[in-house]
Image (cartoon, rainbow, N blue to C red; front, top):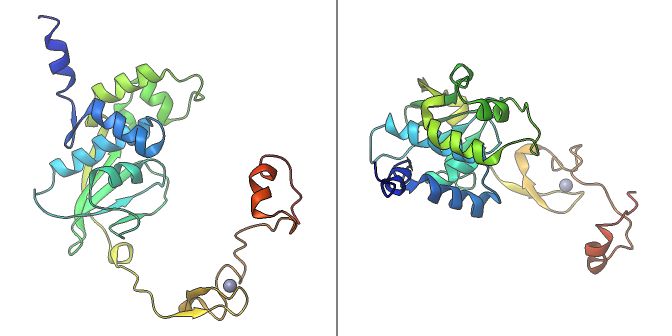
Length: 221
Ligand code: ZN
């Protein structure tokens, strides 16, 4: 085969409407670097859509906050902000696109049994190598070549308790921090009732000082 055919072959690997190479660039600009987890997540989203009727809207559920939510947000209308994407962190590398009325949808997960022939993906998936030890070029090659073949799919129904949108009730002013919070949370906001969000720093650090002070040591009260 003539060498010129190579480029056309490279561009035949698609993730939704992107070629693999285009998606690498999209991930790089959105995620900060070409995270293989988002790239594989892209194949997983693409795979889910292949099993779903076209032209319909689906909600998304990710089983880990790592990487997969970014793949969903890049390739579907679902975002954490608009509420169509939710994360239930059970730590499994899996995502589901489902009909919001019935809860029925397609779950796509990485199947460890299918990783045997992809040593670099396997090493990444099971964290057998440090980031420094990873062969990124090899990892990207394996991700591109394997595509969704390392995944399993299941027809599932997402239960009501995971898909019912929580309608927030009224807001009140917290008597302690004086900020607004959902009144259903109690007489004070959750931050003031025990969920300690931040540690206080010395009050003599002004806003202008923070940028320089933050890189050096500062005393936590
Ligand atoms: Zn408060």
